[in-house]
Amino acid sequence: MSMSLSEIGQIAITVSDVSTALPFYRDALGLKFLFSPAPNLAFLDAGGVRIMLSTPQGAGKVGENSILYFRVSNIVAVHDELVARGAASERSPQLAAKLPDHELWTGFLRDPDGNLIGLMEEKR
Image (cartoon, rainbow, N blue to C red; front, top):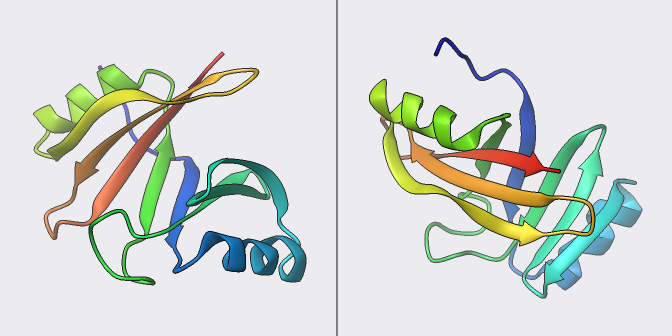
C-alpha cells in the first residue's frame, strides 16, 4: 500500500479544566461546539479541523501534551503500514466513541522524540 498522511483531522489541547476552557474556545474564539462525551472532554470545530479539549490523561502537563490527529480512511491498515515503516505503536486502533451518525476510531503512534501522533477514522 502506498499512502501518506496529509489531512489534519483533530488537534488535542490539554487544559486544566474543560468547563473553564470550553467557554473560551466556544465563545471568545467562536469555534462551533460539537459534543462532550465526558466531563473531561469537549470537541469543537475549527474550519473542518476538530479541536479536542481534555484534561491531562496521565502524561505531560497542561500546555505540553498536544496531539496531532490525522484523518485516514482505513485506520488499521494505515496504522500497520506506519509501524512497518518504523513508527512506534502506542495503541492499536480501537473504537473511541459511538456517535449518532458514525463511530470514531483512534489509534496512536510515537515519533522519534516520543511525541504522540493520532490516527482517526470516522466510520459511517
